[in-house]
Length: 142
Image 1 (spheres, rainbow, N blue to C red):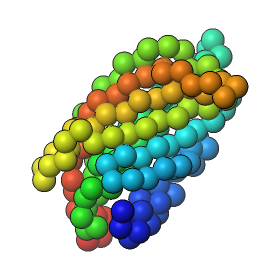
Image 2: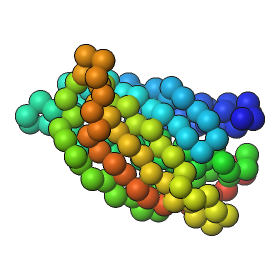
Image 3: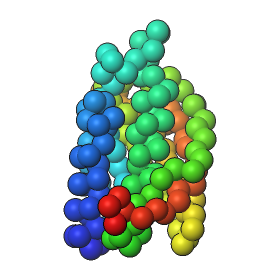
Image 4: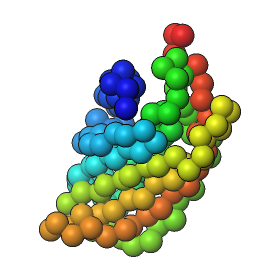
């Protein structure tokens, strides 16, 4: 994979205040696939103590979006045009791991998916799946 594309993804990710607030990190990048991990912090739990669905959604959406961006020209960014989530199990554990993949990359739209796993004591459990569409846009200022 082109190191310039990897650098672009890392720079873009570091500019996301939401990901910083959640303690999320981009841990793997390859052409058409990105993994983002986030601890289940007390600020991101719901009333029963599970990781909030919004945490799974946020990192799943970002992983899928960055997977799409990894296949775009340098002068383009992507935005989510629609995405849905199926919550399969409570987010219990120390962290969530979202792996986004491109299902179909196009000039106007890219169809993406993401799986979100909760990690507890080294074991992984699938807690959510997402599917959506990303649209390329011009780089801000470009």
